[in-house]
Image 1 (spheres, one colour):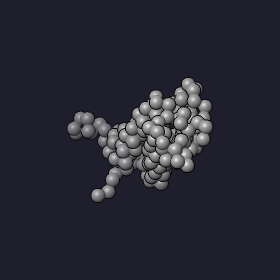
Image 2: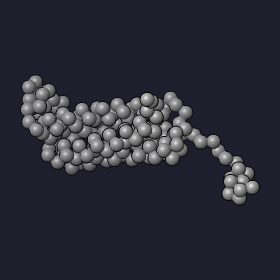
Image 3: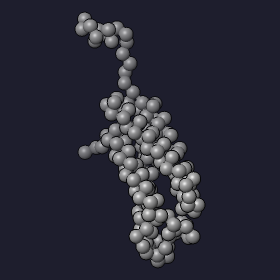
Image 4: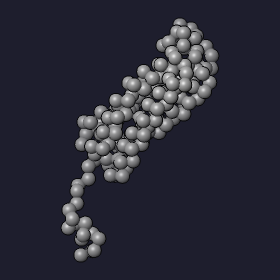
Length: 163
């Protein structure tokens, strides 16, 4: 069974929403602070294996972010290479461009824990999520994500009047 592009976009959008929720939890418990002095590593054996619950949450957040990030890149690549509605392609382009910034903001959140770093990280996440929601909604609205054939005025008038 082949997954359609619009369903892949929906899965990417849901995954991004889940990642945002996980990120909120990660920030709430201060999990990034377990890595602050040794970033990109954390506490634990060789800095790679979590020693505490907060370091596990931080590593799990990174793992989920990596998977979702690749899903976003994949969606952008599929839209760019395929003949999809240009609005979908541009929306996914915004998500792909914001992705490396989001990664840098995430590192900054760990290294410079504070309100500004957290707000930049969260704002970038919301921009990515909004562009994915827009692209997903468009893909379902057009039924396939591909550009629809434009109808002429005569076709529209005939459809309305029934003549």
